Length: 356
Ligand code: UDP
Image 1: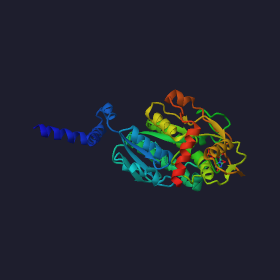
Image 2: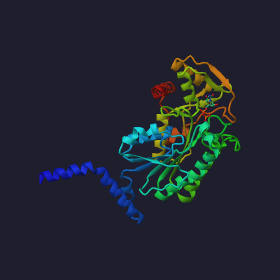
Image 3: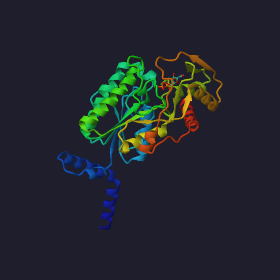
C-alpha cells in the first residue's frame, strides 16, 4: 500500500506539467461553452508564441522567457534573417518548440496560445531593403495574419514597432506623441511606413475587436547574436575593428543614435507584455552618441589598428535619434541598466568567439 502511494506520488510529480497542460486544454474546451473559469485559466502554464524567434531580439527573448516563465515557448521563423545557430541551444529544452514558417502565409495552431510577441520582420536597413515589397507584405499581410491568430485564441499580442516610425525626427528626444517625419516614397519607406501601418492595424483590432494589444517602439539595440551581415553600425564596426579593416563612417559621422543592450530590451518587452499599459511606448537607451564617438569607443575596446574612412551617407538616414523613456519609467518601472562600455565588451567577446 505504502509502495503504491509512493509510486503514485512520483508519477504525479513527474507528470505535473502534462497533467496541468491537459487540464488547461480541457478547461479551454469548456470555456468555449462560456463557462466562467477565467481566473483558473490564468494560473495554468502558458503557451507563448514568438514570431521571428530565431532573429537577434527574438532568440534572446526566447532564452529569457524559458528562464523566466514555466511556459511552453513556440518559436516561429522562416530563417530569412533569423539563424539556426541562435536557437540551437534552446532546442534541447523540452518547453521550447520550433516551427519553420513565414507569417505572410496563413498561421494556424490547434493548441491554445496565450501570448504572442510579433518580432517577425527584417530590421536592419540592408535586410529590409533587400526585398522592399516583401517587407511591406510582412507588415501588412503578415501582421493581419498574426492579429487574426491572436483574435482566434483571445491571446495578448505585442508588436515590435520601431523608432523608424519617427523617420528623420524634427522633435528631439522623441516622445511617443510625436507623429514623425517619414518620407513615404524613399528607400526606408518599406520599413518605416510598414511599421506605421502595422501600428494602425494593431489599434484597429484593439478598437474594433477588443484585442488585448501592446505596442513597443524599439530603438537601436545591440548585443550577442546580432547578425554579422546585417550592415548595422555596431556589428560592422566591431567586425572591421577585430579584423583591423577600415571603419566605414557614412557621411561625416556626426549623426547620432542611442544604443540599448539586448538584455535591457528583452526585460522591457517582457514588462510591457505583462503589465496593463497598451502603448505605444519607447524602449531604448537614452544615452546619445555620434557615429564617430561609437567608432572611437569600439576602436579603443578592441585595441584595433583600423583607420576611419568616410563614405556617402544613405538616403533619408536620420540625423538624430534618442528616445524619451519617461513613459517606460512611469508605466513599466523600466530603464536600461547596462552601461554602453559593458555591453560593448560582451558583444565584442561574443563576436570574437563566433569568429574563432
Ligand atoms: N553607419 C555607418 N557605418 C556603417 C553602418 C552604419 O556610419 O558601417 C551609420 C548609418 O549611416 C546610420 C547609423 O550608422 O547613420 C546607424 O545605422 P544602422 O544601420 O545601424 O541603424 P539605423 O539606426 O540607421 O537603422
